[in-house]
Image 1 (tube, one colour):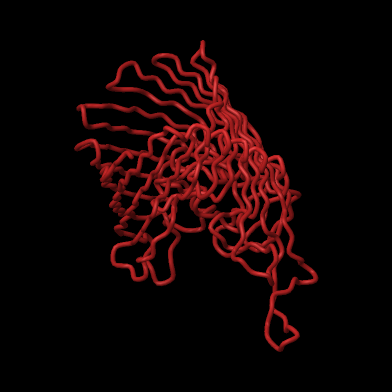
Image 2 (cartoon, one colour):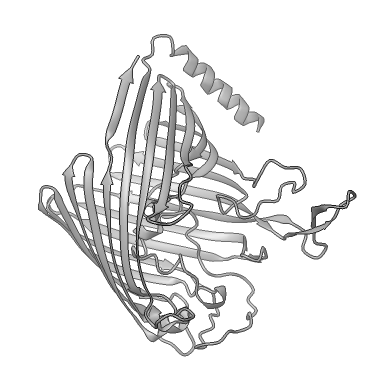
Length: 451
């Protein structure tokens, strides 16, 4: 911590030297998103519902962006409101981003506040913006960028509130972790179209729980259970990403491992040993069309119960084997339906995932872009009495840019699930899913001034 403070003072002092003749710039912009969805199937049967549940809704998201910058200093704030059309109680504003960044001419910088983090291809850390509300992190980020090198250190410590009784207990907050330390290094080879990154994360999660007991004044206070005392459990994520991009070809690959302990919803911790690997090739002979081919493998638990109907006891396992994408933009990788890591399998187990996909992109007009992608989906874990194949899906997407700040994006997904999908998701509606959506985005620049 002392070294961090010294680095902050050095950056601040270096930035102050450049302020004498600097120009101040203040700008305001908006981002208005209107999103609609209609889906059929893909859900287990609800009590009193049909075998094929349907859902239709509209959601609006409004962001006001405020930016101030001068030499050595940048301030950024995003005020956000997300509301389902017609839903009561959606009138609260939230701060999606709010940070200050001090930068020195030698490449050192310090950034503090609420930040929408994005690294590499966003598989492990990304804003997940398609989820409408998106995600951001309250962190201190220190780093250096220059001469093809980028090195970042990210530190976070979260708490539910400013209180005395609960100490350091953190449960149900804005982020899924209590503490987080991340080191990321990236290097771009100047003479060669190659970039490579290394990532290490140490994540602390709250385990154990509190119960209410009588205090000395006759009231109630929080106290630890003797048999399950609150504590912090840590898991580690480490791996790398590589990107090779000559003129008409882009090759991407990544590999990550998870170790340590993971905490479930019951605040119980179990050892985790998981890993994933991915490979992707994009060929774009011209600006008007291209092809994509890729494969993802995410490890799963060694034993996955697949009895149809009813519930099972928790089978004993030495460790959790299911890889968790953590804080990435999931809809970019495993199908935009986000079907496998957003909704749980039975009994909290995961069979992992194999995702082989093939796609084509086209630009039939200057303002119109289209794509079609086929996904073959299977479990990573071998099942005892079922085939590994989960299903097949086809995704269609088109976007039209009316002007520089107005665009419309629409998509349709058709998934054909197998008996394996039905058994693992425990619902007849899981075998078939149809989903259509659109997003109208209007992002005008409102005002900019220099003084």
